[in-house]
Length: 258
Image (cartoon, rainbow, N blue to C red):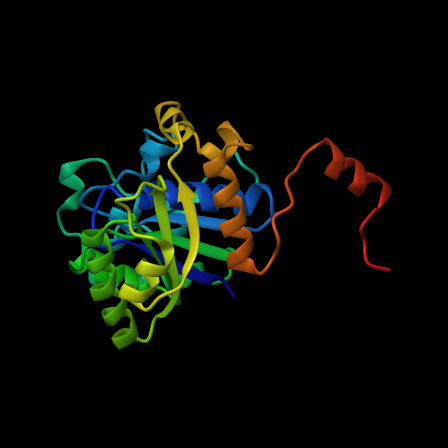
């Protein structure tokens, strides 16, 4: 049965969609999990753009209007094990969309993957709440500043009321400047664990321009390593970088339990 993890934020622009694309790619490519990532941000859908997918004849929009099944909206990505359910980029495809059906239609993915990541809308509108209701667990994305942290506090309270298990907070675009909140301050304010700190990294911007996840663009970059480590933490595995020495160790069976 698939674990359904909602990726949510109190504000837009904190890197939520980037996180979904990179965690999904890391889980599939490095940890060999079957992963489906879903763009649940219907009104401002960006996930497919981040992945260079410009044409998707069937999307989550058609599924939520009852015109298509959820399986018809699943597309293979070029990373083995990773599949994508995009939302429509067209304004006309918003007509008749019923986001209250989201939980019902996403339940049909139960046997299709090990992990389903939901890219929710920011804030606490109908789309974000529907994403939270559809999730077994939720990972909050924030930046190390007071406004985005305060919005996480509200979202956390709603998650608890819904019975959705909070995984914690991923702090994004961390620059270690004096004016930023520390991990300890964010945890004290939110009463949530900061499970990952992803550093400010220009490679993320470069990868976005090339429409490819940074974990594929530059596996050794600081942000990539943080995403790989977080992906491992989500499934209880330690991240071991895939390099010449680790491949050699695997080839000869070093480090295997006897």
